[in-house]
Length: 430
Ligand code: GLU
Image (cartoon, rainbow, N blue to C red; front, side):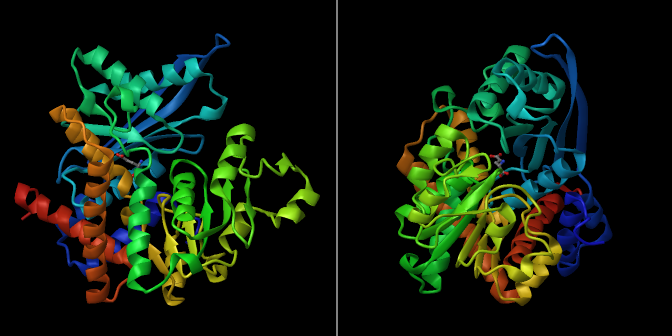
């Protein structure tokens, strides 16, 4: 069995080696190997054309030993129970690694949001809340955005929840718009957290951002914001991509320009190409080459940042990766087999449960603001995020040096140990 593994099987492979290292008892292992609750519903709604359509929907609550369940909801044609389960489990580890008092959960709707009208999207989002309402709440399970879900969707969900329960519940969901009790800095938090870690890492290795070339896969909330941070800090962003493919320039790409064309045309290559028809003359003049998402991962660079979907670095391409550092802004981009190859090749992989934990960290700040009625400033959010994420990074790094393990193994050790401690305190296990 290799890359044919499912997302959950890939998670379990990492988890099992951690549980063995920590010498967990059979009872403790059992509590870890399955989610506490896995809810599944079919949402049926009337589409704009008057026909009824059904969508499978999920909410997996993996573990709440350390606090209420927490995690996003993704809208994707391939979202299924197995994937949502893996993502929920990763959330439990992630919240423990950054030491915020929350557990792990994830939701999903199997749909293609790109073909839905605004009305359909709103109805589907409200129907999701109605389907899982009894399992949600500020002290129970707090959703947030994930792939293809936005602050506007969070606003509809909160409104639906408040209407149904007759309560005022700004803390029932995070990632809300600023004008509707969202938190400052939440929109840039995932990239910001990863950026703080990267800066700390390169300083520790006495590297200079001016000499570092970076490839970013994905130009959504995480990837695009990260490209801006890197560019502003003097790194050379040599390639970016979206689901249609990418562009590469050894001399560097200006993310501001890319974003402008992406907004106008829908793709990062929009300045040069319409579909598969490209202005090759202009590309040549600007030193730009079109690359596929697969090619992009193998480009010459110092730092590779997967910021899109899972399982893109596998045993097939791990040996061809040129980067010396991989920072996982996406969830689950590296398969366990690829991880082994990268470790042997001494490539540092900063794992998702640490690298992209800035998002859930600021979600936690948003939740505390929702409960207290406070409003934090940008500077306060930024300073707190930096403190939390760099503390987590140092906790993980300590484990890397002590146990001579990879950053992923170290992060899992830190996270699983904290969850087990909470389970013991609660008396779930001896
Ligand atoms: N979906 C994000 C993640 O995977 C954020 C979750 C949250 O803010 O609760 O970490």
